[in-house]
Amino acid sequence: MNNVTCFKSSAFKHVRHGFFGRQGGVSEGLVSSLNCYPYIREKTQQIDEISNVHQNRKIILDTLNINADDVVTANQVHGDTIVTLHEQKPMDFIDADGVITDIPNLPIGILTADCVPIVYSDIHHKVVGVAHAGWKGTFLDIHLKMIDKFKAMGIPSANIIACIGPSIQQGSYEVDQDFYDRFISKNERYRLYFYPSVRAHHYQFDLPRIVYDDLMAANLHSVDWVRLDTVTHGALFFSHRRATLSGTPITGRQLSVICV
Image 1 (cartoon, rainbow, N blue to C red):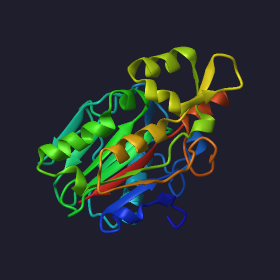
Image 2 (image 1 turned 135 degrees about the horizontal axis):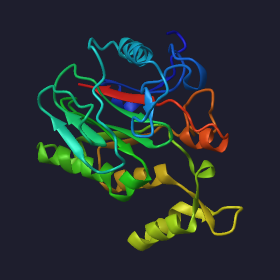
Image 3 (image 1 turned 90 degrees about the vertical axis):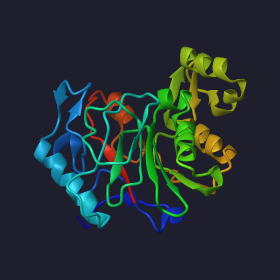
């Protein structure tokens, strides 16, 4: 447990939270060691023992000094659905990529392996949220729709803090022409987030920068960003892109957690 990889934001110093990596757990092999999800391919292939995953999640809870049985996570589907929890209930079979809660001592989390994890809180630490922003979710503005959910609870933008966790960075994220065209068709300003790759008709895409710039433009109280590349830091993070490029597209999932 002494080797647990955990990154935090100084903006959240009064909120229990952490962007965890792959170190400090009990899983072995390709999912060594702090893997927090036992399946891939929409739960059609099991890649880790459920008991290992449960123990890894407990290690995370202990690291954050949270007294709970597990971290609440939804069934992530790369969409823009956000669930607001005012009472505790099972979430494993609820399709959502964002969770918000005002329940004390209820840890909520997001699983990633290159996508952008985001944690949110109001400045009084009464409401917290997590979002999973892959390219599809970002295209659908899930990171901004989270702010709308906070507003619906009576919390203005100026009272919201957010932090973007480690994710795939531009130098590691090559995309094709169709991908580029999709984003440019939505908004011409997205040209700022691409530069030509070494391959013809391919581009390097800056996913976390879009999220960061959008959150900054939303006039929040503060926006932080842990700028680490999950692809190139193989000892620290699981990465779907790295696993795919290596020819062994099996990798674990790291967990980002926040708790009132």
